[in-house]
View 1 (spheres, rainbow, N blue to C red):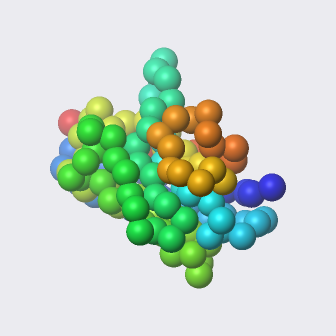
View 2 (cartoon, rainbow, N blue to C red):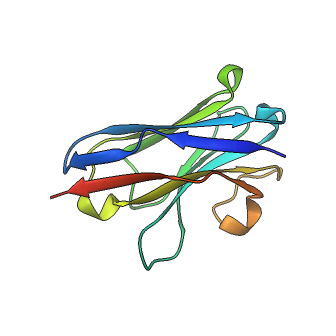
View 3 (cartoon, helix red, strand yellow):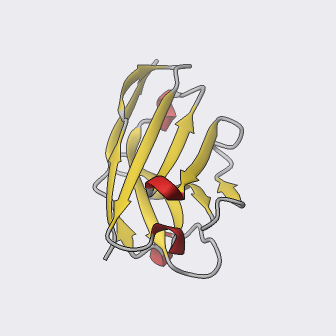
Length: 124
């Protein structure tokens, strides 16, 4: 079992920045690829970003590429999402997830462990 707890969400204005954190416990964190997803009301959960076990490879959705940065600190069992240039359409619950597969995936079905999420609201 892997337990994941997100933090760092909040209410900000368009153009502002936020840094989300996800703290993991329970298993060896460096054995897992990590992903950030988001879900807005009435919409499906969508991929935002992912990072490989070592942190050497990162992946982003087209909608956040160039604005968001995913990183991890295996010594602290944590993964982060730095969000710059926030837009109202970024408003959603942001969730982190862990995946033990060899390759990094964008699909939610690969991720076996999920946090409860943190709300990000961007006003215009």
